Image (cartoon, rainbow, N blue to C red; front, side, top):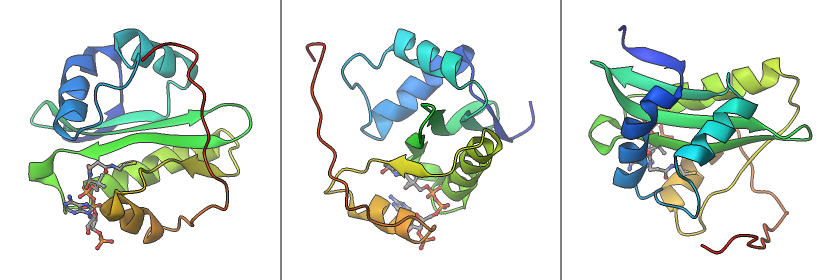
Amino acid sequence: MKDGIREMTMSDYPEVAALWQEVGMWPHAKEDRAWLAAALGRNPTCALVWREQDHVIGTVIGAWDGLRGWIYHLAVAESRRGRGIGTTLLEAAEARLRELGVGQINLMVYEENAAAHAFYLARGYQHSPVKVVRKRLLSP
Ligand SMILES: CC(C)(COP(=O)(O)OP(=O)(O)OC[C@H]1O[C@@H](n2cnc3c(N)ncnc32)[C@H](O)[C@@H]1OP(=O)(O)O)[C@@H](O)C(=O)NCCC(=O)NCCS
């Protein structure tokens, strides 16, 4: 298979999970195989992987909830960073969301992830005055 972007499918799950584990995005509460299947089922065109030599080395999940677009789980394997893959994945997910009619994208970044804040600010994102609050409906 050619290197580059393609839509994520459940056959990518083992490598996607391994990548998220490597970059510290895994495991989140209930973000398991069923969680990913549900996410792909709702937004099948907006979750993307970057493959090289038939391995997943980057991911992004774009999601539309009917009101806003969201970006989740943008990640590139540490050994492949700094070559434009993260930017390409982000812009591709944005383009897919735009095609669905999304007018605004939100995303959540941990306060302490200064590198990711800088990454997004350099790519047209702005700090939002909205503070995220949350309530757990399932135990972690
Ligand atoms: C953020 C991330 C996806 C960027 O991927 P990438 O393929 O290196 O991105 P690009 O090559 O397109 O761009 C490199 C940019 O990322 C920045 N960057 C952020 N963290 C970096 C890191 N750990 N290594 C290299 N570059 C990093 C570089 O400074 C560079 O910024 P600039 O071009 O504005 O100067 C990647 O660093 C990553 O997976 N980080 C860990 C997971 C994470 O924090 N994701 C976002 C959380 S919501």
